[in-house]
Length: 210
Image (spheres, one colour):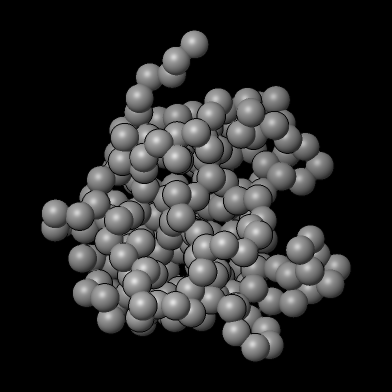
């Protein structure tokens, strides 16, 4: 049965709509993935998704913060303006072709965990590659998760995400060169346990405006 076209699918485009699919197929690690979602009751259009989720033992858990909020007021949508910041000959160090780990954010309208609309990495010699995931919240807003890939041979894909504050700062510096302005101080309520929040350390919360 055809699904109703939602605001997010209309913005993100057909490719994202196909990737999202149904809630059950996207979040197959749990029959009721929403049971593990901390921000299922977030205030709809007035808020952003809070956490990046990954499956663990059949449950989707909030493992990393979505630490950058972006708003665009021009002709381009926020997610398109962000994509432009990673495209073109001046941004050849960024790529979206490398294999990516499972990453989802909770979409209250879809009532499903959905993949990013865009993911970018900046490979470089050694450790700590920049890794960015972008979700369209609506036409004017996008939610961004930024971390550095740290070599960890005990982890899946032989690396783990860390240094969120440093990653958010480097992302902000990069997008400032493409016309984005930074608004700080800025604080995000992630809605996770105190222990998980403490383990994350500095998240580098920032609001970007275009």
